[in-house]
Length: 306
Image (cartoon, rainbow, N blue to C red; front, side):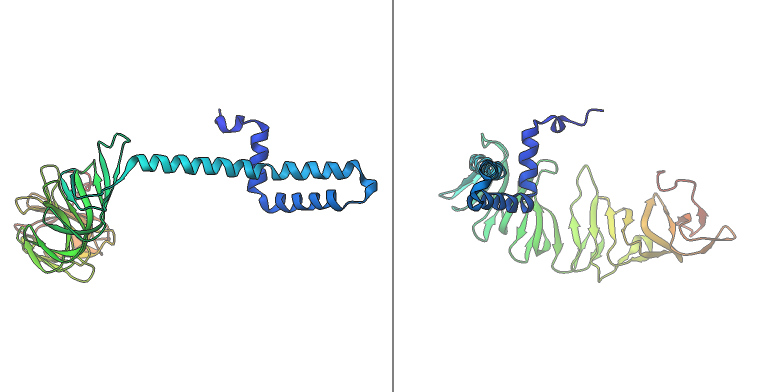
């Protein structure tokens, strides 16, 4: 097995490496040898010169490494300068009207692709009042930034703080500064809303201190869970890493993996419960018919089936 090219480095490179890494040993040793060479008795003669030579060998790697580090820092600064630009006047870049003083970081030295923008002050951009840094995601095609103050955007009462928006300024996600009804759900203040699109459904994460009524399931979603909702208002899934209990038709279910498939809820029991005439342990997968309330055991690997 080839351990890699680093093992094949010349021995002098390894000597420099260990000399610098274990400086707390080599530096005192170099000082001691220098003192021996300088103040040693005359009868030592050749040994004094040997001490001087050994001290020089131990000390030499430090200016070498220092020079390499300085050169690296200079090159890094040059590369950074090639990727950054501070605007000396108001200018529109990547479709965003930016004020003078904004620092724009590009992904390439040709400056064809903007990666992030640091605003010099709170600025109105595409109808949003933003502050600090904005980052562009090539994956999700949205800007992420910080809302300077509570603001009503696209009908959403967005709270000051983290926000995502697209090139047109349409909000893609934010935390609600006030209670708000969306897709038939009365979301409490502090809920995090992520807009759905053709590729993904909506996601509503409830705050840690507020629950929410879910009329279509005739139940209440516990605080902290995330509801995945389709454009037609159908709840597709409820999930939470904390595994809170959500009761549907009198059955205590674990919200860790909670699915709505057609007119059925499929989830695991949050506690022992009688199903099919027998007491079933917690974590047993069950199906609940929302139309008539009938309860049945789910099949094997129920969380994988559709």
